Length: 91
Image (spheres, rainbow, N blue to C red):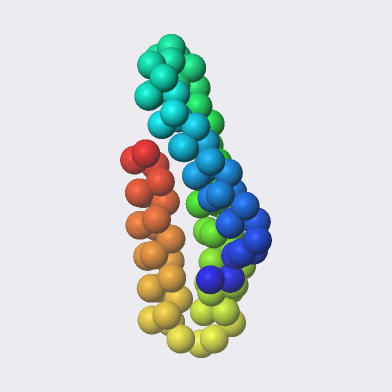
């Protein structure tokens, strides 16, 4: 993985902490909108991690594929990005 591992790990650890907090909120029968707001915040952090990984992929793996003369590899990288973006849009 070419993404900034420290940055991505920090984001994921933050999301994990938030999820643990949300589980506690559910166990404590907290107000629905408070739980929802924390869920939305967790999703936002995960989206930031997704963008970081995708950015690094494009700057690293995709850029390298375009520097090489391998058209098959370039097409594969483009198709991977398209599929990933389509999945991200569905969420």
